[in-house]
Length: 328
Image (cartoon, rainbow, N blue to C red; front, side, top):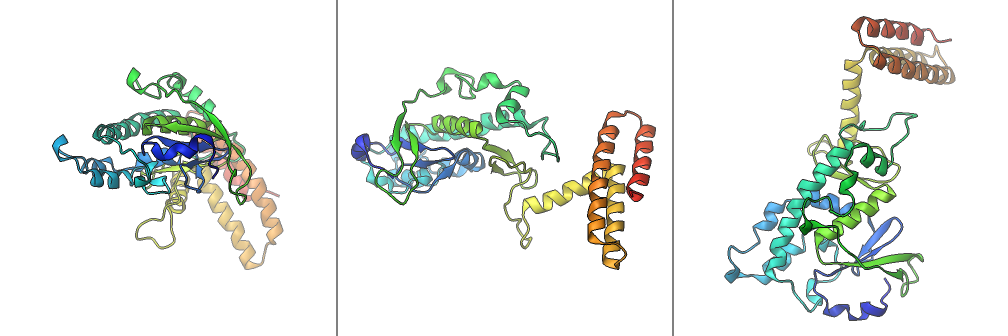
């Protein structure tokens, strides 16, 4: 990482005055050379057990254990990405910082969860084939929460107004030829709350969105171009299985169980696939049938969704059943 200008005097900074260098798809914390995707710290905060951190806080100001507090700070999102020891900085934070940090984390966990739930409340968990993926800005606008993006840091009072930040520009690889050349925005943050606001908004601009896994309940980062509803964390007690593996199967089984069109499509699919194994159908013929059946299925599903009576749905399903079994 480059060391230029003001950075030469950084040894006099408090450890809470955090330097971030924002790049095109990732950013860098302090002197840690590891690039971090946008939204990573917010996801960390949403999954963070703040109660454990609060246990490290002293019961009264007369028993301030600085070493214990500094160790606890090393496990907090954002600060755990520091590459160097916190003691490398000359000024330690006051006790008020550690106390307000817990309050900031609790605020983020409450307010940002509310904001994200509002965005995704009416959105399909995973994009269907041929369906246009809405941009983060469209999701926010459609959810009528756009007013919270500007000026209030997703908050409700002037104590959590959006931060006023100064921006400097730097070359990322000023002193390291092994890194690709990139112009970065360099900013300094004194509060985790302020940093998360900027990280989240920059990430949304670029398509990085935090989502909650319906299976394990933990938050994960959906990167640009992805539409997963489930995270990729391994399931405890399940060998080589992730939430995404199990979630996709369960989601499909539920869909097939509750919709006759999906049910008939799967029966026909298994029927024709069995012919390949039996040698009575060539794989190319099966592929042609599967493509045609998929188009008929999607058309029938759209019609199925529009009608209101059970008799109409039954008629559509029966017609579809005949069509997919006898496609030429």
